[in-house]
Amino acid sequence: KNIDLNLLAPLLERPDSVGISLQHGDITNDVARLEVDTGVNLYVDPEVNTNHDLDTLAAQIACLDQVVSISNSAVHLAGALGVPCSLLLLLKLHESIKYHLYFLPGGVCRLQRRGVTEGERHYSTGCSAI
Image (cartoon, rainbow, N blue to C red; front, side, top):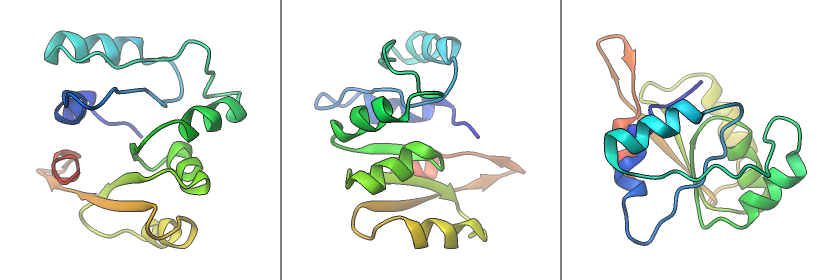
């Protein structure tokens, strides 16, 4: 699962926000493309290994004001830590929604549905609602 980082640019351009990546794996090319395309700099903490160190990832999430993400471990950690989050989901409800509604605490995580156009999944609808 992934999201085109350019769709998050309007959120990251806000003067009162700083974008911090919680993404697993190497996203160097994606972050570079975001900066070239939009001028937005997304911070990737080199000290946090999101694949192998959940304690440090959880500590990083606990310091955030909000998490905006597709369904992944960052959303579940944010919910467990009581950090407000916006979860981007498909516009058409899927069986997995029951899983999210069951495990994520109400009032902490807002569900934002994403649209589906011409067979291609995108998150622009959900991002614009945040």
